[in-house]
Image (cartoon, rainbow, N blue to C red; front, side, top):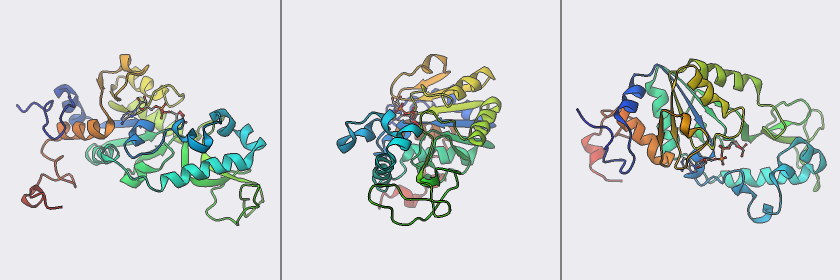
Length: 277
Ligand code: APR
């Protein structure tokens, strides 16, 4: 039997044969992702985003409802600068591997804490964005998402075209609850899955960090992908200590060896093998 641990396309990433087999035969899979999955796309983590001009601020001064009430323009500008930085970012092989897994298992849900929208850009369809999406803007009064607004006064964020309240990013701030429907969907999937992949998250911020614990308590196999250990590592059935841009494609290649080599998931053809790019 081929040993999927030693796949030459993913040197250095060891995928245990038992894990490859479990993924290939899983009926219900959930993936939970965090900032680490976007690191290889060059997206700064929340803390890294407080660099340069923003280095003198504390996240609690910028990512809370009370900060927005006190300094709406400052908070708006910070998110606008993060939105601008995102324009250059593209999905990486880790994002794409999760799309491949979604295509291959009967039931799949991707729950992400990332607000960068890169999973959707990669093609993930069954997706819940637990912490919102940086590219969306909503009314700070009634929460309605707004696509267009008039140029704001210099010292203010733009205002809602319907009611005149300030607009704000559609992300979850500290002190705020997660969108109930998104959390319920993720929690329900965690209870029912037979395998959960936890990639690129420090697994410290609740309630998202509770999802792998829920999955484990309900009998799922839990797999962590993270170069560093986290509080979740001791609870996991498998911990792959590698970057997600390498480890997730290696996991796909190990689980579905006949399919994973080609760009569209097909077996490699002579044309693809030619290397003319
Ligand atoms: N591949 C996989 N994991 C990586 C990579 C990589 N290339 N690079 C870094 N990591 C890991 C780090 O080791 C760390 O454990 O990703 C994790 C990132 O942790 P955090 O920055 O805490 O991100 P996350 O877990 O998503 O944070 C949760 O907290 O900061 C708030 O609201 C913010 O959604 C965020 C939430």
